Image 1 (cartoon, rainbow over the protein chains, first blue to last red):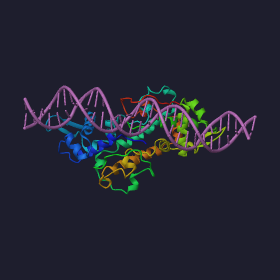
Image 2: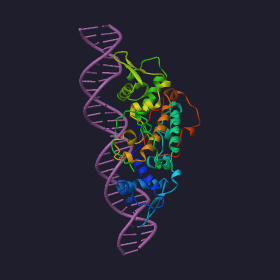
Image 3: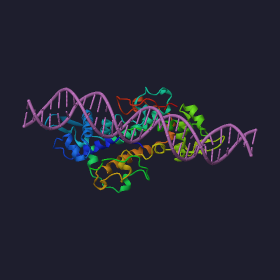
Image 4: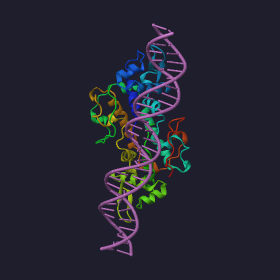
Length: 158
Length: 158
DNA sequence: ATTAAAGAGTACTAAAATAGTCCTGAATTT
DNA sequence: AAATTCAGGACTATTTTAGTACTCTTTAAT
């Protein structure tokens, strides 16, 4: 399955919670409580989001995290980038070094094309879109039909 | 990184080789030789592609594999599906069961939106596009800038 | 008929990536 | 000074993915 890690899923949960309460600074422990994700894991995610300039942090008592930008300006691509690094489906789309036969490779360019399209899709959706309640029939949500589930847990429920 | 497994990368290499020589039946050992992928791994991939109706196989001496459809009709989405299962970024996009709070989940619907876009992008590119030599400046191929490589090997070079 | 060549199916092992935890240090408020 | 909170890094455990091996079935050639 073309998939994102759990941490990215968690991150969207955390960020959409924060997007709904922009007025306050949120400490890691508070977010952990609200989301049900353990605090150590929440902290790990928050740190990554700060490093990627999605969040700002303040230390010390009364410290915590706030969004660095308006929800409309936080793209899904930037969230994925923060948690998982570059958005690219194949290695050779990232580094040309890895490919021993870069010049003769007819596939690399075409993977690049695909990556571009996907990147564009992920750039076009923001945290604001994620928090906005969408109410479409279920069929529209699920692009693939009958399905073998390969993992269990997720917390996209807040 | 939003990524595909190596096997999927291999699969595109194998399929584009086969797409260039539609006239002949290709045995696993032959494909292994040409691509440099070990035969056991090649076999594994070919079997998955048969199961997904991307390839047809014939057993016995002189047997082997051929494309089940014209290259224009083999979508990248179907290749990914064959190797990795459903194309969905988050678990909750696949099964509603997994999500304890399905009704109250504001995020699920929005992930579905993203999945749809990505699925559309992957449906829009076929094996024919992959084999077609694209010659654009390198910058166009690589959507993300400076980059930490997390894996090494790939064989997208044929 | 027998043999050799090929794929089908399944189970298993090894390697790599991901998730999750813990510890120590630095900044800030009271 | 003490308490709170984030920063950074190292480490462990878990899960996923990759790769291999083995047995069975099918087909062609002799």
